[in-house]
Length: 303
Image 1: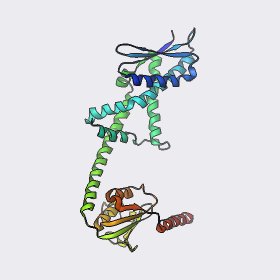
Image 2: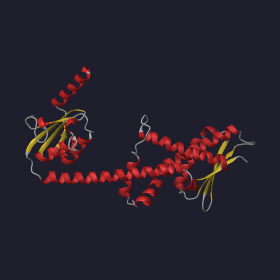
Image 3: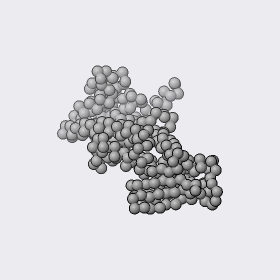
Image 4: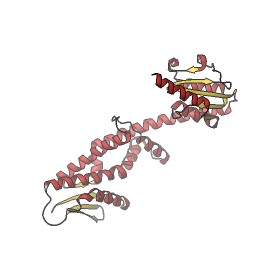
């Protein structure tokens, strides 16, 4: 009798339904030659893929069936089992079990850099993992005619499990760095809160790339730590970067209001300033901003 079988030892009814649905969708184009059947035992479940009608599958049909079953099971692992696997590694290797910590750690897992720069990082990583898992499952079905899901996740898929371990290590590093950064930002916010404002307002003018100008309320260049008030990459000396200089200058003068003239608010330095100064800092869209746009357009034409 032609048959492939998937066995599951520790699976909830809700997850079993998800697996069944994914397998059914995946084999839809083969529904004329195969059918799925599920049997529930005391300690495990089995999903069997059997032939419709008499005779046997041809070698080509067998190959297609193995491919589609492996793809359906791979989709299930990535979408419904991977988070649980990551949680196990976080708890086992780093003793992270609190839900608040895990939620942040899992968010960093989804931002893992990937070497395939021509693809979106998340898509590239998903393709890599999909290939790792589906090829292993297809080989298992070809050799044995069945797959034990629990054994597969625990003892096979070594490359995939190593990849998850690297993901967890990266996420923990990023989480700790972010935690230190947030603690530092909180300290700066407190310092700004208790400090009296020395000037009524300051304008942070973003001229493009990494060039910034600090202006006082009269729109005159400020001279706190950089000559002329203009901050460029050439000022990056003595292990200071432009973000350090801007932030330290603003904290020193403690303006009651900071007007940020930039059309790229996603820059780290601008995000940091808005975090520290909160409602004291605002993004602007004034004539000065429009003038900056005109200058950038003119520079583009000249180059």
